[in-house]
Amino acid sequence: MTSPLSAPYDNLSPVVQAAYRARAAAAEIAPLPRAVKDDALLAVADALEVRTKDVVEANAEDIAKARAAGTSESIIDRLTLTPERVRAIASDVRDVVALPDPVGEVVRGSTLPNGIDLRQVRVPLGVVGIIYEARPNVTVDAAALCLKSGNAVLLRGSSSAYASNTALVRVLRDAVGGAGLPADAVQLVPGESRDSVRELMRARGLVDVLIPRGGASLIKTVVEESTVPVIETGTGNCHVYVDAQADLDMAVEILINSKAQRPSVCNAAETLLVHQDIAEAFVPRALDALAEAGVTVHADERILAYADGSKATVVPATAEDWETEYLSYDIAAAVVDSLDKAVEHIRLWTSGHTEAIVTTSQQAARRFTQLVDSTTVAVNASTRFTDGGQFGFGAEIGISTQKLHARGPMGLPELTSTKYIVTGDGHIRG
Image (cartoon, rainbow, N blue to C red; front, side):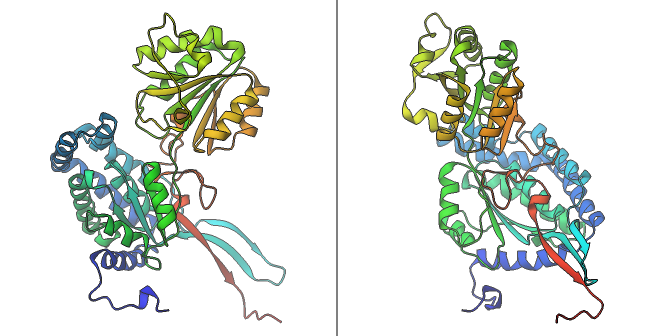
């Protein structure tokens, strides 16, 4: 079978031609020193600030179309770019500049008994394809992380953000090219139809890895239909479990921050579990606090028993509520008999993203962290901390809920692979 890399360039689709250009750009930027890549990223940050007006005006087109289509406010929030948000994105790019360059890092090395020097070093993945929904900030975050780690990136955002992404990529390419790097290291995948997505998913041999970011349907489609290797970034059905020995004030604050600080993101809590021994003291306080935050509670029968006289909007939970990533001011809630029952519930319904326990018991915290198998387990902390920026990784490329090749917030090292360098002195194998 002919390799895609040996196929003639003429008469290929625009998507495949973009992949070829990305392949060439990846080979050019892979060996570049950190200083050159950092200068390009600083140029990107400066250009975003200078051309904020262009970006915001393009974003306004997308917002207007979204409102006309009746798009939910949570999705519109994800889609919106204000001057403040653009400046924050530029700041995130500068944060990436300050991070260590993983390329060339020696993961392990030794001199073998036969005198051969063996080193395993980090190298770029090559061409990274990102398929994502709604959030135009991903356009810049992904490009910055890919460039810093020596990769070329093919960006396929949703049609709902097409004007925004087009404007952002224009800024990125101008800045990168002006800094002396190949502009084709950053490309928007041509086309707005599903056909362009399918072509990207089939570009094995040209694209080294795909990273989907979005809802469960998008991720499922990419994982099941792609011939290109995929790093699965999962949905966020995150849980907050309030243990029998919890500090009630702390538990309320963590619950509200986890759910309501920004409900439209994947690390927002979607389910509250309360130990039965503390339910009488905690649930009424939690319902009042959730009411004040504007959160609707989808409650099991034991939570419903505390709803009389509460300010909260409380509705009976259905089976679907336990598996739902609301991304809105809604939360499922249940009382559980024990910590082990909380873990059992989480194992049944979690998406494997983030789970939190609120407790003053070290024994309970230790058991919870041992038994829960998610990318992140928080003890007395909000689920909202599961984030590359909060972890000190810089702007993340996504949060992987699989176990190969990366897990949790994906920063620069997760955008590299490794190769072995074997150095001898005329060594031959007998």
